[in-house]
Image: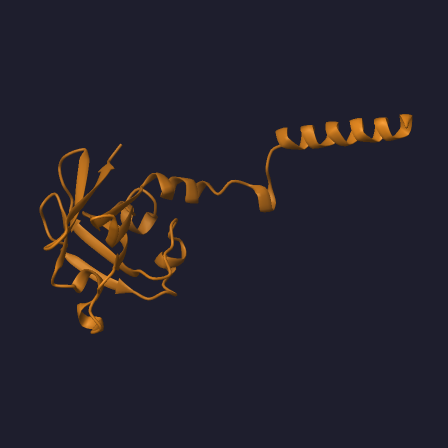
Length: 164
């Protein structure tokens, strides 16, 4: 019984000490993922209690070196629309019933991304059913950016990003 108590106490101490150890390798925190989550916003458009559309946007300029010097504000955007068109040319952000703006301005460039695109692979929040885009807008002068995802029938969702 005494041996069992000593083993239990040794096991408890080793578990307790490992919780305070610096995490390395498999258990190391992913600092990029943490920074990306801090620059990611999610919104939904509802009809009654049913989600009609969903958007997840990550502001890329403060995260990736290839976007730091970009004069436009660039976002990785994932969009899901419940009753989307069958025609791929009218799906997602190309759906005529939906619009995406930043501070009231349309994107200066909008590129649909494939599932194996490197930007999609580093997305902090992934959706299997959404369409991914690289959307770049004129860079607003204010410290706060408001992205508006609007449906003609169901209203809008506003995502707010801070430049701090």
